[in-house]
Image (cartoon, rainbow, N blue to C red):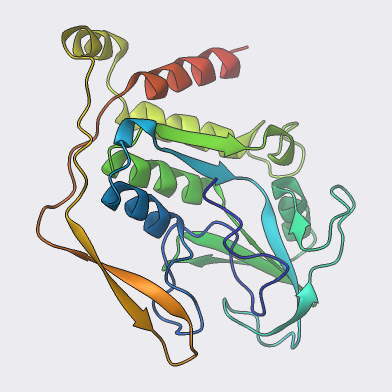
Length: 250
């Protein structure tokens, strides 16, 4: 569950599931990102073939303190207003974001954390779009973990009415990214028939405790030269691919 790093409890505009930490702003805890979390599990010795990174279609919403300050890290008065679908302050569905954009919300892409955000009047939402999902699948691939999971189908644009990207645009983006990276079925069967074991050797990271000027404690991971091992094509990823293929072709 690599999300809920930020939410209605946060004091500035931020993302629930940023892929990378926000190094450019010292107010952000560098531990609060998907990449940091995955690398921390690996550096602690967790078997890669048991790690599945959670992706989410839920957007985090805030009420801006000042409508002219609308970048990531801008001050907020609290969570965003309850929307018409979730009726939950601080959280909206992906299709609600698309609806806001149709109603002239300004949308932006954050290159540092590989996430999107949009704002309309005093309402600000941070969310993962199709590009975000592809970036996250590629990251999971680069770390050699078992795969990804998605939360949740009913918060994607499941009818295709709002985003003009067809049904399930986020899930489809995940499937397409997996399909681009995964081996063919015949290649995969050959691989698992000759070897059923997978490396659990941890990355050679060391953790260095730090405290920033705002008093936030964190651990900085330093690569000691081992590099990142290649991607292990485990059975779970293969099953996910087949499931998505059969499901999307219904």
